[in-house]
Length: 443
Image (cartoon, rainbow, N blue to C red; front, side, top):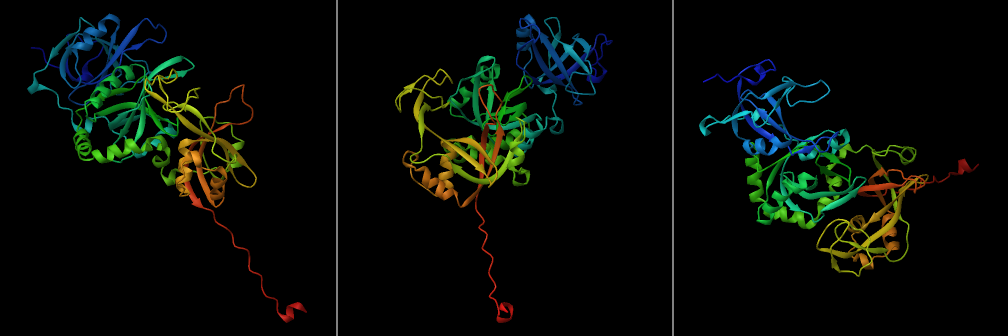
C-alpha cells in the first residue's frame, strides 16, 4: 500500500499521493458572485500535524462529495486536483497555500475507527470569550463562539435593500451568563437554524460552535453570521464538555435569562467600564461617522408632557398596525405567525449639557429602564412624563448613541440610542461660603 504523505508535501506536481486528513469544517453551499447559476461548497480538512487545507466542491459534484465526507471523521484522500492560491485570497493555513478540488472521481477512503486522527486540544480553533464581543465589534474582527442556545425568537424575516431575507434569531449564553442574540441569515437559518430549533423543541439546550461570526451594533450589540461562517451543532471539541456540564446544572439561570429578556439590552452589560471612552457632545454633533459608537454623558429630559404616548404595534418587530390591542395575527413584516398587537410606547428625548443636546427616540424597553432606575412601579399606561422628568433632573446619564444613515427625507443629524448604560446622582455644587467681614475690613 502507498505511504501516506504529510499535507505540506502535497503540491501540484505530486503524483499518486495519499494524505490522511480529518474533516473539521463544512461550510454551506454558496452561489458564485459573478455567476449565480454556479454553486460551490468549501470543506476544511486537517492532517495529523495540524496543517489545514480547503477543499472545494462545485456544481453537480456537491451532493455526492458532501454525503461522502462527514464532520469530525478521518479519510485518506488521493488524486484531488491541487491548485495554488493567489496571494490576495485567504487560506486556512498560511504554510500551505493550495486548495484541493474534490469531485466524484476523487478517491476517498474511510479510516477505521481505531486509526482515526485525534485533533489535539492545542490545534483546535481558538474560542473567543463573551467579554471580548464589544471590542471585537469596534475592531470589526471575526469571532469563534462556543455557546449554549437558550431559545429561538419568533422573527422569521427582515426586509433589506436586497428585498426579503430569511433569518433566525437565537439567544446564546455561556458560563459568563451574558445572553446575546445571534442572527442567522439565509441558508444558516434554513439549515442549521432548523436543526437547532428541532433540538430546542425536544426540550434540550444544544451547544454550537460558530466560527467567523461578527459582532454588530444593531440594537446595541448582536452577533451575526457572514458568508464564510461555519456552525457546528453539538461539537466534539474539548471545551464542549465543561459547557455541557454547566448547561445541565444551570437550568434555572437559563430560564431566568429567557424570561427577563436581558438580551435586548446586551450592550449595557457587555461593555466594560474601562472600555467606555466618553466624547463631548459638541464633538459628536460635529461628526459625520455613521458607524461610530459615541459614549456621552449628560442630563436626560423627555420632550413630552402628560401620559406616555404609544402606538399599536407587532409584539415581535414593533411595526405599527391598525388593529386592536391583544389581537393575534400573522405579521407580514417579520413573519411571526402568532404575533400579538401591543402598546408600543414612544417618546422623543434629548440628552446633553447646558450648551449642546442630542435628540433621539426612547421606546418601551428604555422607558421601563428609566422607571426602574427611579424606583417607580407605576405601569407604563399610567406613567406621567412630568413625573419621569422630575426624577431625571437629579441624575446624570451615560448613554451610547450612533449617527443614523442619512437619507434624502431627513434633515439635520438623527441619532439612534444604543443603550442607556448608567444612571448616577447628579453632583450639586454647594454655594461658596461667605466670609463674615470683620470691623477692620469694613473700614
